[in-house]
Image (cartoon, rainbow, N blue to C red; front, side, top):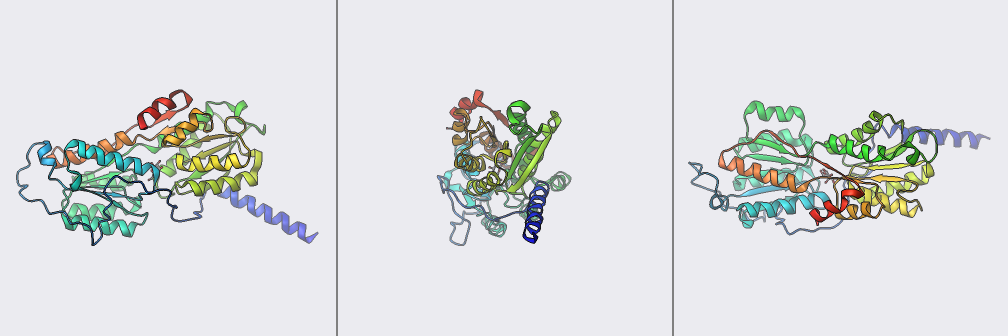
Length: 378
Ligand code: GAL
């Protein structure tokens, strides 16, 4: 008898914890595991053994933009973590595009922050000491932007932030100070809204397998410090609510953008909630690929008894959308973002300057346009 009561209390506590998880996330693992390590880009870490680029001289009069000028300019690029699939596409395209603009590959140094802000801060310090002409930074922690901006501005180096958007107060400082600092990225609210619409467009009759009148979902989040993760989580659900659906969050867990962490989270959730899981929202495609492994292992079928969406439009995810094993994804346009970032760097170098925010659009991807996007990204 006693045992039974304890059992009930335990399961109630578990349910309460999981439901609470839909509002307040608990991070289970801090550092995402690495998947692969592709890089054609230079991966000088900026450590002591990094080749120190010569400081440029004779820049008294800014010459107008021209390829000959760019060939001598030194670009420092900081990526939060090389093993991130999406940021690998981004940095590869960035490197290629910078070279196509006339920068010399030898003058572009790309460093791996290894998901550690202290490591990245050391790399930024090295770039400053080396006297790079412009910095492009994908911060490990957006909340470190103020410190980063201060040291880069003090060194009189123009700065282009990418991918992890610093908050409004920080962006206001750039405008108020008239500093050569900008952010290039897409509005993550749009990607979340598209994810919600991908699901909502299916209609309640299709999704509501357990017949409770609600869309029962699990949410797998990226790095919770990242505004992309926060907005995608919020706006995917908001889009469903705005369309008049009743939603029920079964669990909301942090997968840190990583496939293996998402696989584990979704496997656990499917074990716990079984057929009640109707929708799996993943803040990115890497995690959606992990979710799909768990869905397959549980014998569930996307498009028949469960629905799955991601963001990024990785090739593998696009192939899944085409063959029906993912409901949809959202194209996170790394071409547009990397090109805009490089163009912004050039605008600073030529003295043309930039707005303090440079946006781009996401694209909703279904079976109808997945091939088109795949042709573009391959
Ligand atoms: C997001 C992207 C994720 C991850 C993250 C890194 O925009 O969707 O896959 O790369 O950036 O900050």
